[in-house]
Image (cartoon, rainbow over all chains, first blue to last red; front, side):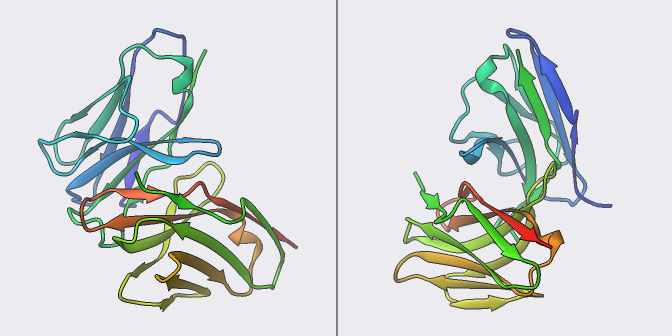
Length: 114
Length: 112
């Protein structure tokens, strides 16, 4: 089925380790997003890419980097993981104008940093 | 930044009853709103949307009402079913950017 695919689904890291969360969409969407979801905080935007070749910071970008590899793929990297980055991470995509049915979300990556 | 809040963090309803989930927003410039449903262990899923030039929009068993005067959004679910148990988020978007701002969510539990 068409949609947004995230890998891995679960990950445990030690403080200071690095990792990359992968995201791919097959809906020919222009825009892609990374959110984190914490209890009682709702979804908070980390970074987004309005179109291939561009990336911009969201509300909580510190400690993260992103790469828009091509139109389909948008990765999120944690260079030196911290316990405060324990969260569920969601990738999403949308048409260039998100006021056309909003976002399509992936199923999430549950990350624990110990 | 934007402020999207929900009046009740949890809601329990009997199967077959109607459910109403409320949301307040603070940005009067927001012109597009979406309700998302998030089941346990899954990503949010689009339910229904509404633009600021409308007051009401109906889907299959769901209705969204928008009151721009008091900046209030509601989601009504008719004949609630056990499969409706989930967390529901409202999200708002303004024409100044392509970001959505999400509320913290309301957890709906349907009692069989």
